[in-house]
Image (cartoon, rainbow, N blue to C red; front, side, top):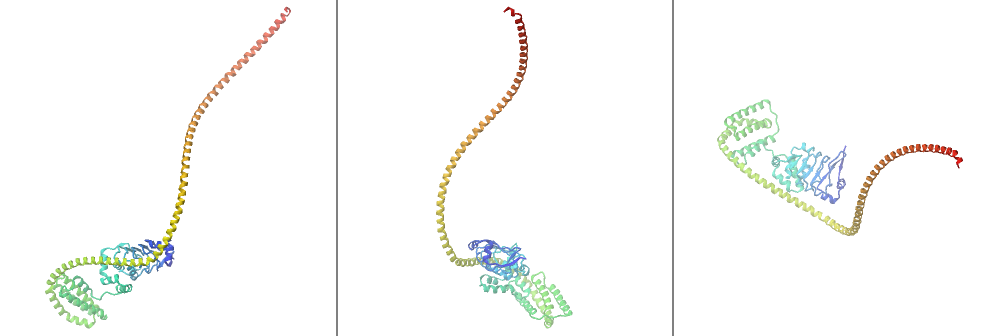
Length: 473
């Protein structure tokens, strides 16, 4: 299970690896929860993030929005999957007038408070996207109709204590206890349109007071049947004598049904019996008056509708001008609050400025030292450049020599190949000469042997000749 945290400013700075000065300049931060740790309470943890534009607090355990009222420039707020459960917590966002996007999905308030969306649309004039859905003009109109202009005035300009009281009045109070038909009459016909309107409103308000103040009583089955039959006959008679396609006829028919239901549910027995005794006479009088004045009312109704359209157009123009003025006034108030915040921040900024000046002097001294080191390094670099040029020249000479030696090696290889071929031819010739020499040697040996034999024969012959001719000497 994830651990719940009550964080502080130091925890946020350590988590984001920021200093206080860097936090003041930060425009977007992500504090979304994880499987091991989730934030339960913000407190004053975001006090240094005055210029924050985007804040991600999704997947935490937040049940309160305290600690966000000073973020006047905040435009995007992600509260996805938290524990915000009441509109009262959403009301804390009234100071964040620059909010453009809010995500409240998977929060209890979206299910438990059905008007939370209209409430935020009404309270934040610059809101463009809520719960991953765009805010359209129909929703803005519905929000303006749902919350009165007096409450809007209380939202924007009161003190915090008065704003809390305005919130209690807005969220907890019950709307005025008037009959639904009165609202319909007031919306369909502006005030003082005809003489019958005021009578209708008065009568319906009296009936509304009766059924709200009188105790609930039980009725027998026969009484229900009697009242139901009476009003069925009345409706049939009215349908014959009045045009139910007209606005007045439809209003009167709905009025009879509501009146029938109210009598069945709420009127005491004495009031119910007296009303049934006198109702037929009252109805005849009302039908006579309605039939005589119906044509006049229809013509007036058409004229009034045209006047209503003109007035609605003028009202829309006036509402647009009003919104522009309110937006300008909110911007001025935001600028004033920003100026106050900036005035409070001037003193630490002055101290920081003096510290920065001292640091600037130290930095200038370091710069002078670094410049001297740079000059020494530049001299060394020049000498190294000269050595590099000399080395490049020697390398070029060595390269030329190497190319010449490569050419000589190629020539030597060619000569070696030629010498090898010559050696092979010489070896072949030498073998042939050796063979011839051996053959000649054999012939010479044979000739020498023959010469020896001839010499021996000649010598024998000479010895014989000498022996024979010895007496001659």
